[in-house]
Image (tube, rainbow, N blue to C red; front, side, top):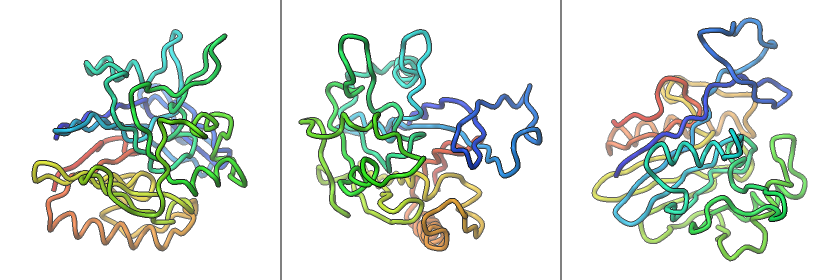
Length: 245
């Protein structure tokens, strides 16, 4: 399998939930509000023997009228129309911002016309209902009643080789994904396993729905991944987009 990180840049985020661009050559981290986190925003493409899979969709920012995620794909010689599956770990705005695009006279439509989108049903219901400041409901409306969307329930397998499972760790209906193809296993933990350092050290985050569960799951996955030689993808890691064990 081939992995292509699609970095949208480095940002700081604080309790306001606003993602502010950060340039390590020009900006001072200590000048950002107390409690700020330094994170990468990094969807991934995984090319398998069957599909071109997009894992999460970034912030949804545009440059010169083009969705940044689309431009990143084209820079990697992939036309957005070639994406066959979009699999979402969860629908927080920094992961789901590029799900859909809005154009004057055309309204809002899903960003990948030939892809099937896979989303946890309870996650979508929660995001459009009670939700929180981490969701932007208006950006998720296109997932409702679309023939392109498959709503998942708890855990299962897509096309016999993509496994998914709700953890309820980072967010209440967050899911993690395994892709198993050609004797390889790629693990995408989304915000349950966002950075390499969190895999190597015990760390219970206050911003997680269940920080202790997330910490314990990371330890479990890290141990199993070492035994089975998984490749881990890290959505928020500034230095290590992925690592193969």
